[in-house]
Image (tube, rainbow, N blue to C red; front, side):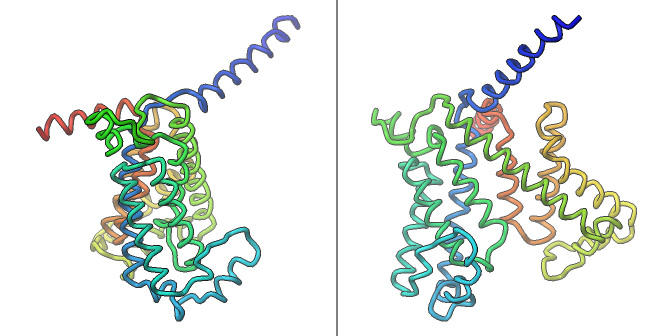
Length: 316
């Protein structure tokens, strides 16, 4: 009886090793990452334009959060930014011009292998300078662009690919074939999204309003964020309580439900519903959009390619 058991242990370990290798080191096409690149690059350009429109207020000599305060906020961490030492309007404007140009190049897929790291770095510098004045959108675009650097996300739907096909010129970052780097970037985005939701759900479970089922109500009646009046839901307290409970359950267990093929479509549909609701009802259009984009990492490249073909066919 002991011999089959002892023989099964190596087979079990071998199976886990094979599954581990397949999870991380299987080649993946770049189509899904290309969509994330386009959306992330456009969003980064947008936030840099917003920052540039209030440049001296955000980072100037008399900024809302001055240099001394930033230094104290980062006294015990490894964060660093060259913008800690710059308050010249000319240099700050130059920084933003370069950041916007890099972000647009990332969106368009021009010299993608250079544009993505540059856009990430310039955005990170601003984020470390503006600690205390950021919100989720800024952090998510930095996260996505950080992982996109590992990939060949400019392999399709990019100027790099167009130039290669049009002129026969091999442009840096224009490789369309599946690569392990694409898979690594995808897996890291997926896992990071799972961690975000897990800790978001656990944090909500510590709040009394989420436990008693009233959190959604207090959210939709908050006029600071309200952009769509859905207070009529107050006539249906059972609906509000149910949606609150479903939201906290979905967010906490997202990390388990999104991997099985059976529950993945439902989990991703819930993400679109939740973040679409945030975008429409609470005025956080950019944040809701970028979170849907982050969830898109769980869509397989062949599915993205098929959807793109359908859109192209109907558009033609």
